[in-house]
Length: 399
Image 1 (cartoon, helix red, strand yellow):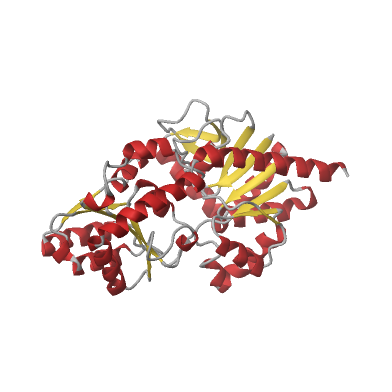
Image 2 (cartoon, one colour; image 1 turned 180 degrees about the horizontal axis):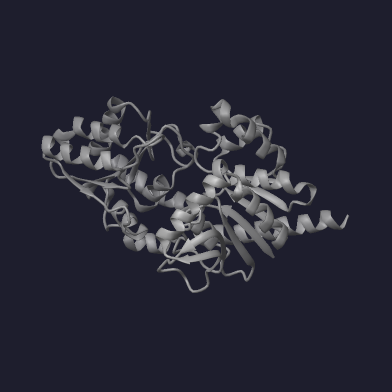
């Protein structure tokens, strides 16, 4: 089988998804939806179709890169900028050429606003001979962007054109249908695939969650992330945090600055994890945290929420995600508005004082992880999914 993925080649979520089929012996290709010339080190057994690229270290020996090798990353960067200025549509046209040359059994776009739009252009250029197309919805692709007039037409075109649709929320299936989805809906699976629960168990601190003395805060502060609201709420709870360390990961510069001011004002210790901190280390920090906070004005399930569940940290998550499809508000999670520090403060005070709540949640969330997040269950399901789609496509072609 030959599968062509259209996705961010530097994304850990894309790399984790592809890793599920890396040992199947299939001919797997990846066309970067954003032309950064970067290849994620988790990728294996895949051919990556860059435009131009430079030297990269740490890549797996089975990764093959195609495109123009300019040796130096700085030179490749300048070349990519020049090409984009002269030929703004070059990537969609390049994708169409790759599809025509490879003739894959399946084209799978991961995410809408880059990969999906580009795949739509390639499909429109090729026409009736386009392979079976799976369009996967990430995070805010429909939930947020589907409300913006400048995106609605293209989102509808993707959903009317794709043969299969996948996402990680029941919420997004309903939204996709309201936007014109006509293809088949695939099983709802986290967009990063499953987790190694044996590794997770080793990284979790021994003993009940109520004994832990750190709080994790996702440090995104941008068009969607609201980490500064989290810091404001923590400041309002400073009277309860004397024994605690606030651990912030994926922090933007303004969040790092705000964290320094937070510590100077309150005396509460903060630890800013470097942006290149390995995922295993971040998991270990969740496994030592009493509470993990994730705030965003729009999201799907949020990988960090699943990691907190799995690692026994009590998750406090914005109610704009679909965390309610995985956990129960007031019992195994607390869901809060993403821009309201007062409600987050109330949730934090409850999570900091109610030992029975956080300990019970850790046990129940672990049981949920074993049934819904174990990669030993999810990986075979994903493999069979591709086999079934290829078989269906072949059957239709022979009619």
